[in-house]
Length: 174
Image (tube, rainbow, N blue to C red; front, side):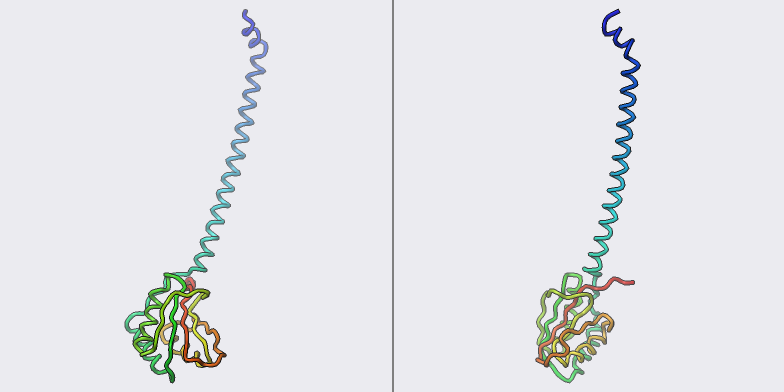
C-alpha cells in the first residue's frame, strides 16, 4: 500500500471530520453574518424612513395656487384695508411658488407695489408682517388662507408701509 493510502486509511476519518466541522463553523458564521446584515438592513431602512418623514415635515406638501375666485376675494379684502403700501411676497421652495405667485397677483390687482422672490428662514405656514398695522394684512389673508396657518412677525413694530408675506412649508395633512 502506498504511503498516501496508508495515511488516508489511518487519518482519513479524522480529516473528513475536521472538514465537516469546518463546514459547520463556516455555516454558523455565515448564518450569523447574514442575520446581522439583515438586522442592519432593517435598521438602515427604518432610519431612512425616519429621515424621509422628517424631511417631509420640513419641506412640506405642495401648496395649491389660489384659484381665480380666491384671488378676487383676496383682492377685495386687500382693498378694504385702510392703507396701501409695498409688499414683498416670498416663497421658501418650489412647493409654494405658485401659491405665492397667486398671492402676489391679488396684491397687484389691488394696486399695491409688489416685489416677488424666493426667501429663506420661513417656517411652517404663511408668515406675514412688519408693523403694527400688519394684523389688517392677516385679516385680509385669512379671507382665503386658514388662519391657523398664518404667523405674524414683527407685528408690534412701528408701521413703515412695507410688508411681507412669506410662504413657508405646508404642514402635512393630518
